[in-house]
Amino acid sequence: GPVVVSDSEIPHPQIETFQQKLDHFNYKDQRLFAQRYFVHNASYRPGGPLFFYTGNEGPLESFYYNTGLPFDWAPSFNALIVFGEHRYYGKTLPFGNSSFTKENLGYLSISQTLADYAMLVRHLQATYQLSAVVALGGSYGGMLSAWARIKYPNVFDMALAASAPIPQAVNLLEDKSTFYRSVTDSARQAQPKCPETVQRAFSDILERAKTPAGLQEISDIFQLCKPMEASEIDHFLQYVRNAWTEMAMCNYPYASSFLAPLPAWPMTAACNKVLQAARPIDGLAAAVAMPYKQPNQSCFDMYSIFVECADQTGCGTGPTSKAWDYQMCTEIFYEQNTNNVTDMFPPRNWTMEKLNSYCMKHYGVKPDPVLNRLQYGGIDISKSGTKIIFSNGLLDPWHGGGYMKDQSPWLPAVTIELGAHHLDLRGNHSSDPTCVKVARDEEKKYISSWLTGEALCEKLVKPSTDELWM
Image (cartoon, rainbow, N blue to C red; front, side, top):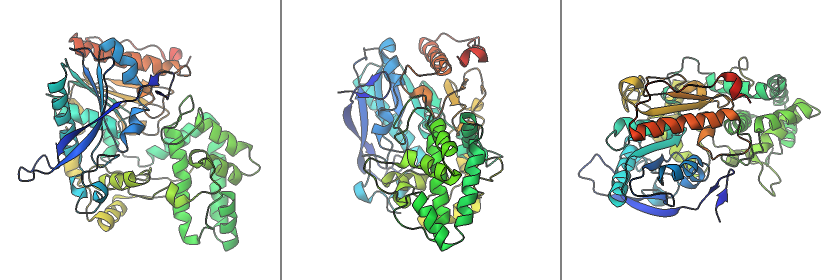
């Protein structure tokens, strides 16, 4: 039966494939591969729009079953719903199991992916009678939705780009500690004394790590499968930090399983564990176990759970981590630092020099900041795009890297006070705070008006802040 991820059930999709060119920009290369895509056509009526989800860095299922919004909206629009899988993720592997060799990774790029989506939509337009195409996506998928609208405005009529930190994705944030400061702010909002207690736990860890006996104690407290060596402390600290990253991004008002199986308001649950334990270090261990614990698991293997990579906020695990690592070495790149002053984590300085040397060592490539900031419409998006909604939740650690203000009358920003990572794209839920319901209504009004061609001359009247907190 359908999977219940919110109060609205998400029906199982029809799974289809489409033959894509391996290299859209080289006429001498005629090789093809099968791109997977998911279709839901129960609400579709001829003349309805296409809601096209621009798949991001992972298997398509994880986005399909965590994105209830198009399913909630489709009946009132008579819309066709299609989710496209991103090349090199899930089952869309151009070279099968050898897709991740150095020589084969070169076909993994944003421009190839946007061309895949444009070609797939053209194919769908030949099959269905579609009035318009609405691109939507969250996080990197949200950036792809915005870029698809900018690069192929003849194919994509509008876009909803949720939690899409475009300026940060090309390392244009002045303050490189923005992300982990936001994670810390989220912990403080959950429990005011949480960050300082986490800091005490980290101090305790660093003190114990100075002796073999202390390393054994840390390994026991955190239930690591193997006793930790002194040389492994850096990986361990990243493993601990990554648990907070996942909980902050998925700080939803109800239990969810998007990045990890987590309870409602996981930052509050984690901070309660930190504050209720006999010692801060025990509380930190209990909090870190929350996103990492699997059923029937007796210990934690910090290497299989957390893969170190070019992205300081984590690359996931398995083949996905390899593909995203490569993308973080080419077109998406950022410095992410912690300083233990504005955030609760031990100091760690990740610079472009470190990124470049990591990327050269692993892949023989490095990012091209100049080109990356020019392509896909650049950063002053008001010059290159229209009809793109940028939504951000203030509980999401990525919000500081996105467009928080309207970029033009045709590029509205929607802010969700109590929203974590693209909460607005999830299905309606009885535990949703008022602010996300208001945000979804606002997004729906923009899309309806753009579809019917009625100009929204006046910016939609936003309710007062007081109403949003109800």
